[in-house]
Length: 421
Image (cartoon, rainbow, N blue to C red; front, side, top):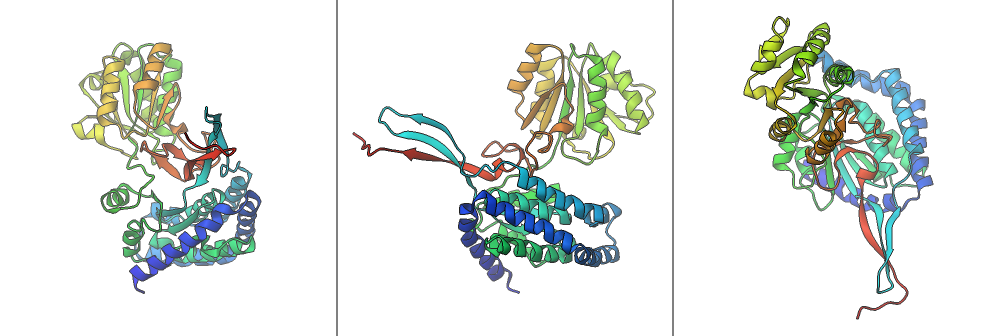
């Protein structure tokens, strides 16, 4: 196929569908989601068969076990997709909500209405479940969407595309409200991210290499985060009984997530009491500690210890590796965070209210916490119900992006015949 022509046609169809998606009422959009959920249950065997084609190709290509695990659509994964759609149905609909109404001296009433973004392009890796999650969130928020999944999942995504189109049509919505790119040609990505006339925003969900490429080439705005270099700072006035479990959980709950702690900062006066206790816990998980000179001396004898290099403060390990540094206080901790953080999530452990409030005000990250694990930086944990990704940016959406993040605000004015003098 001619990729340019194909993507232009896809874009035009999405733009046309976006108007119908935006004007549909909540009941109609929810009906589409429920029809899709029912069809997934009905066609689960067909989905498993399509997925097996992808798995066979992945194994023949020598893909690593972690990738094959993400690609696998088990019965449990199918059930989770269905449950996810039904949970999205239960979420409040932000579209059309009017807020901040006020009466001006002229007599007009001015407020803001929440509206869909329009057409959202989503580029993601080889997880078939993301196809359904992303489609569900975009439908609920009144957006049209173009989905470009990983080439490894092409057969499963084609099967899901038919199910989604059936659900949309069954609810009276345009089948082009959700389009799944039916080619593995990488040129489709290049076209999708350079069609601002058809696509309003791109949401990339993938590795650092993909997002770096999109940042360099895209002419469509993006909601994205490049990496998650998250910090926990244990303050001089921390409660050690809080600090130890929080710092352990922030690193060891899961290694491969963007909200996992990658650097631990400890105030000098409390370091001799807290670091050996934490080291004992980290040793039980074989976590390698990359330590600055002060923490290296305090951790002498730790079985997995290495001297930290400058690059360690800049690294998202996504592995059982943790950078550790002793600092002189909150100012040095915040200076380090300002220099090395990816602006994702940072946490302070302290009983000092003034220190906590300084940290919340002055640390410039999408999520800033007091006495809590960075692993809570998640749409579900924040009460968003679901998320389409995380944004480290400052404009439009920041932090976990749920339904509200897939909308924007426009001003609305109610008059009574007023004219401006």
